[in-house]
Length: 430
View (cartoon, rainbow, N blue to C red):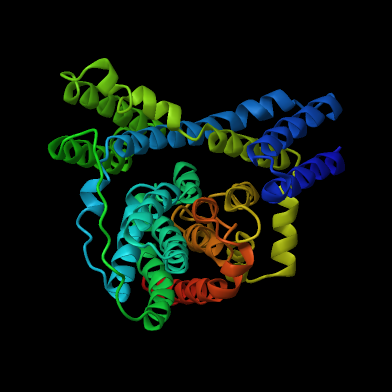
């Protein structure tokens, strides 16, 4: 039984990695592997095993993550269709290549921590199309956006789906991940930024473009600031109420829903059709939500049959140094999606009490979980297909895999290692 389940998972994952070659969205094989692994487990398990009880045990965690993502995507889409992000992008007016690169990367870094790296990458790609006409120059900036977005998402509980998973799983806290990972994440971004900045010279030609907006400047500001405030409020809501984070996120959706209805109440039905929450819900990337369900369900099945615990034991025997194990997981996330890697690690290792003998590593906010958040969040930058932000930029700008490999993979690797070393040197100070 175990062999068949592992084979289904591996085959499904191969199909996911071949998404662009097969022209089949990765959500489809993810759903199949998620359901089939549990189906085989249910059909072939012995009488003393209860797969349904195991599935019911994992479902609250899986559903909590999916609801959180759904709420976050809805808020961000609502801001976007109301042109709220224009409040930020309209402030950028420099044409100097080096200055613009620094502005774009720093803006991406902090937006990613506040929103999420995927959404930020999409927003910044849209901005770059308005600011930079030359295709080659735009690809350079877009690639740096990938590195900056992943670095920015690694130090925020809502900046990357993996840090969200670790936060929801109570492996890390908001205070711990922000205070301990922001400096390594900055280093991860700054090293490639310094190197690439030295290669850029001159100015871009001035661009003239006219844009019509469906909302007023005041409406855009109200919706943007309220939306960002709702996202930032989620960790506060969880801390105060001790309810799951998705409850705070859905509270934010409700606030934004009421706000936009009131702001646009004087508009006609036709005027509101493209800026209402119903249109935002239509634009939410449900394929990504289904993809995460399939992967998380498959990993949960591997956990239930004991495979992940066996892998953990093998890793501890083969590579006694857990720091190297985490760095390897981060590097592997550039090839394999970081969601199943982190989900697998959470099933392989348990969060222990503060008084346990290995609490230095595995307690909440311990070294293992924080370092895993950094490595899994930033390691995907080493390949264009290694992160959701990279895949989004790849699709929007049609970046070729080998072009990125030749021009940016080594830069991303240097930044990744520099940030990892920074964290390991800082950890004794914590």
